[in-house]
Image (cartoon, rainbow over all chains, first blue to last red; front, side, top):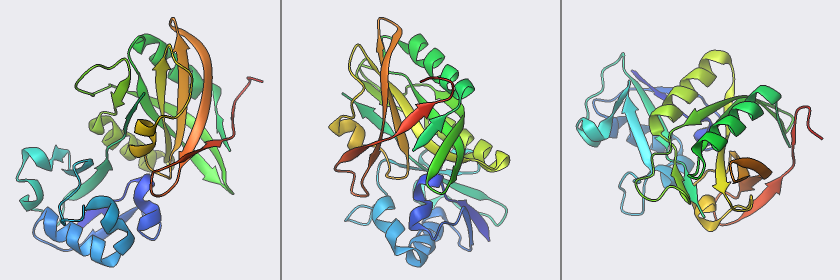
Length: 91
Length: 142
């Protein structure tokens, strides 16, 4: 089982859990299981077409999955997956 | 209500004044109990917005990742975000509202001519369509 770290800002949509251990072969598998368990999280991570939102960054250990195999990035049991929601602003 | 401890506030101001005339940004770490928040640590971030940075910012996601990790290790939460409005009031724009999260206390600091010129804290609703002011105080500052 890999560990998914839930950032503070998203814990309110994941039963206040700081981390969740989930089995799966890829990032997509893990996030699918996570958002099945926590439906409120789904709308914040995925758009209406079921694609991961562009402002949601996902890391496997310290590597951004955009520079790996995106959501097809394989995940091993000892891996830690971090969800990092973008924060921006301006006038 | 959020209290910003003096060392964190000093870090915020140092970073935002150094970033002037561009927007500076970072994260606030601390604790929450009974609806009261106390920010103990401020972590500056690079502004990674690819464009004119005098009126836009994007937090470096790697700094966010490190801040989340530090918070876990120290028993803290990432309570909020800070950013500056160079030569502009400390209000919360529609762009600010649309690009944050409802959990966060959003500290906006006005910096005019590299000097502090006021601050305000805002929270947004879950749909990220409107902001309301959050009461705040800075330790040691009336």
